[in-house]
Image (cartoon, rainbow, N blue to C red):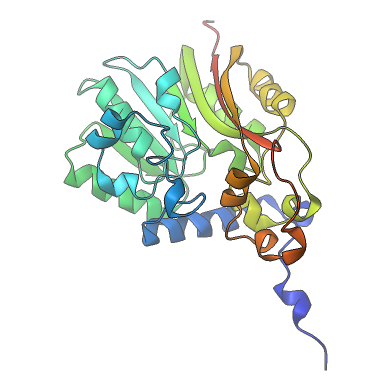
Length: 281
C-alpha cells in the first residue's frame, strides 16, 4: 500500500503559483477574521500588547478591529495625515489602521480600505457601520489590482501586507497609480535581512504568516524605485529576535518539526517603516 505521507507535506513556495500564494493568504486571514484572534505570535503578541500604537490611539479604536489586528508597525505615524486628505489602506484587514487614519483626516477626508479577504471586508464594514465611521469605505480587491481610479489619494498606507503579495512590483505600480502627484506612501512591513532556512522559505504557511514572502531591503526599495517613487526613506527598523520570529511561525509546519527547535532565527527579518513620494509632474 502506498503511503499518504507525501500529501501532508507543505506546498513548496518555489513551485507555487501567485494564485496558490493568494489562496493560502486569503484562507489564513479569513480564519483570523472569524476567530477574533491575532495573526502573529499568539494572544500575547497583538499590536496592542507590543506597544506599536500609543495607548491613546488604541483606546479610541473599535475593539472589533483591535481583536484582529495583525500589523508589524504603525504606518500612520509616518504618514503626515491632515484633515481633508484621501487615504488608501492596502490590506486593511479588520480596519485598525483605516479607522486610525479616519480620525486623523476627519469628516472632510476619506479612507478606502482594500482587502482581498471577504471575511475581513465584511467584518470591517460591520465595525465601521456600528461605530459611525462614515468617512471609511472598505472595498474587496487585490492590492495588485485596486478597485480605485487613478490619482485619487493623497496618502497610501500599508501595515505588514506587501510582504504577503507574490507581485510586490505590481503593488507599488498600483500605489503609484492611485496617488495624486506629490502623494506619499507610508509603509510598515517585514523585510529580509539574511537568508531564511530552506524549510521556512519553502513553506506556504510561513508565507501567510508574514515571513517567507519577505524580500531584502535592496529588492523592496528597488521595486519602489521601479514604480517611479522618489525620496525613499527607511524611517526606522526593528530587528526580530529568535523568540519574535518563532512567534510569527507558531502555527506553521516548520515550527512543529522537532529538528528545527535549536535553529537560531534571530536577525533574519526586521520590521521596517518606509516612506516615499510620487513626483509632482
